[in-house]
Length: 132
Image (tube, rainbow, N blue to C red):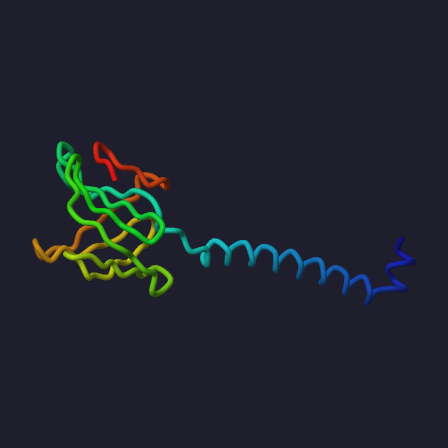
């Protein structure tokens, strides 16, 4: 074995470097995939820091959004992705951008002049006590 390695130093070193390069590239690709994977906004979201007895929801599905409280539809319209995590919501009452990040999004509510945080509760669009 020593004789073989001494005669073929350069090819052995190159094979070892090639294996290290493959390992590094696969590891780097896995890390980049975690960063570059853009999550889908479809699903159900609930308003954070709100009274539990009257929760407010956003539902996104197939280019449409619904904003509602139980038994009451507040708004419905369409949404469009304009950048990686930025969406435009359009309806009769809303013409706003939202930023989707970490399974949550920020929404500016003009009626109360406040930025609201909605967190994802389900990847499946769900309506509670409301028929659409």
